[in-house]
Length: 639
Image (cartoon, rainbow, N blue to C red; front, side, top):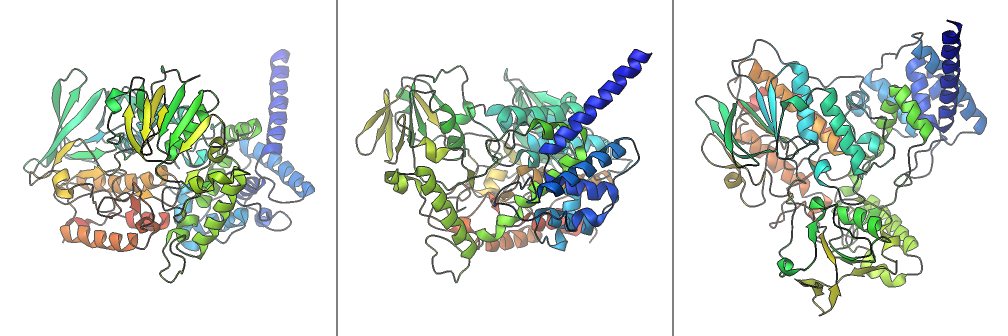
């Protein structure tokens, strides 16, 4: 017995020592939020503990406070955490105003009060769950297309509400784009802790910007924890769905790998296939003649050996920004073919591992993770939005769109020049001639240092054709290559392609939308298609930053409210045509005021006619407000 007691005491001593060591590596502003939350004492948000502003983009781990004040905070956190674990303290109830005020102190920033409830939801103080009532109509169930991020999120909420559902997934595993993309360097360009759901914050990220394996592991863990896997039909693909007005159900045709077809019937159909689902490969002559391996980043073959080989990479977008620095130095040579230049933003945490002490603290105290995630939410969400709004009076529209955007341009231009050092010959090839954020903002993965390497060539000549031996450019130069990689993005404008989805009139979505011109009310629902709900639909991508997870959660709550109404006995929910067009006219008017309408560059956000199809003009707060409550009047119900 004494040995058992001694062992327990020894373990307790060791865990206390680990906690003390972990607090030495913790973020001081986050610790202050934890202290105030657990003690209810506002002294931790006042002098001398109140943080001071830190360097730009920095986590400000010290809070810019004197060393002796930091030590006092760590000592207090040590005692409070132990008391909390022993049940002597509980999380004090926080109002939305409390959350806003506390976060503002930690970030040394004034946060508008109207963000309070949104922030409280992100922190987990307020719930986004929707109760689906009983009894329910006979055969009440949902069919979800896709077991990627958004499909998983909806499935978790349906499971919690006790609504039967099935997910049809074309791959052999969950994860969507995080299952399919395995190219070297693949990872998030959003802070890892923000790339997790508010209802399941992840304190296990090993890097501040996680790579693909960890993201996929997170999604698999969610599926297993919430019992979603048993509801998934793997290796099946939806080819067609038809709405039957008489039975108010969707008849969905699926095909398996052997080509066997079957039909599934459900009153609710939800698509979670996303926008980065089908690779886009440019129509460059001669590709079929290339003698070596040729592949898209989204179809990367890990068995292809690139060490010691010459790799031609066509494209310089997000995937190339991650891939090229990751293979340079292992490949004998990398030749990059650039159609357009990219602005790339530096971040001090991009290549950093999460310190072991912080990992331990996040696992031991999830409240720390929740507050740390909320800080990332504010820093990476609506803060950038104003720099993307066109000031019609701005005199330098060719290079920027407003005063704030110009400051970003100056900062980023200086950064690129610093990275290029004495390679002034690369200025023209690397410094964009369009306003910052006109294209998707990218994080610098060492791109500008990589293109300076002797074993990396940056080619700006137009690609004429692919030959058996390499890539021929318009100036007549043949760039020999052993491997060709398409880093050319996805068919993002072809929403829900290649599925054929037909509404109650018999007309397909593709016919209603026309070429590359998808529209939906709130990005979620379309007239003539009752009980069809689109996740990650048109104009839902927050082009000013943040995380796809944030918008996804707003959409899931909205859809769950629709599910609840259908469970109450509403036969069908079809968005009113006038409501649909009123929204879309407002949407287009706002998009015209955003940087993506700038003529100085091409962007995959915009179709051939110039309409912005992918990006949302709204702040996260705007989107949250618009999707917070489903209004039955919008669907002609109860009028």
